[in-house]
Image 1 (spheres, rainbow over the protein chains, first blue to last red):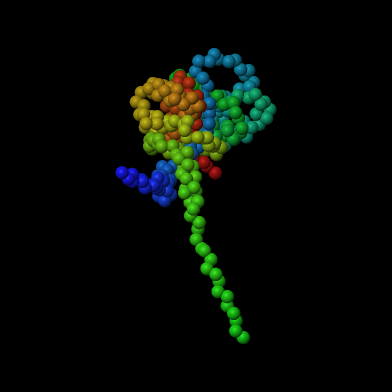
Image 2 (image 1 turned 90 degrees about the horizontal axis):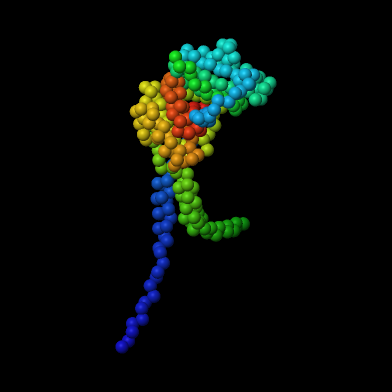
Length: 135
Length: 138
């Protein structure tokens, strides 16, 4: 009985279409990708259950914003554009300065961001968000 | 005088395609790594402008809260009807992603009242890192 010798088969994965498959996947991921990253002002909120820390009054600058968008900085009304300069001056005198930012419930968010932007531009790092007084 | 014109030899012109799959694979891997598939539509808001804005480092650990001028709140894909729901939603997200950054996309005509309420809920949920989305103003 003659055994038929098996023919050697070609056992390789065809790689000619590899580029096409990769292209297809590439196009899929290209379409899915959105590169635009969120940009904005970063802030860290104070934790909820921390005992109040007594801070020397000299090291606090209060900023109040009312419903009409007027800004009170250390009991003086200032325009939003001047905050950067004033805070920068105060920071150069006292680097431990904490800026306490307080708004009312009716303040426009736009004004709040404008003031926060001014503080960021003055390189203020210690910014505290104070709760509004209950009215 | 006869000018002898030497015919230029047939140069092989053509881009070598042997390494094309490798290049494509490299691009493929780049886009695979950068793609974040989840994307939420959120609410229609017009963001305020600011000058000194920073980029968020990665999209992966960012959750977004939208607040529009009708004081509606949406957190990623959840519509927040009662403000107190936000606490559990934010907390669950923090458990999944400890380095969570909450990106607040608030309409510029919204009132601070609702933003303060959101702050309070985020503080209760211990998600303290926030980012106020703003557009670059020159």
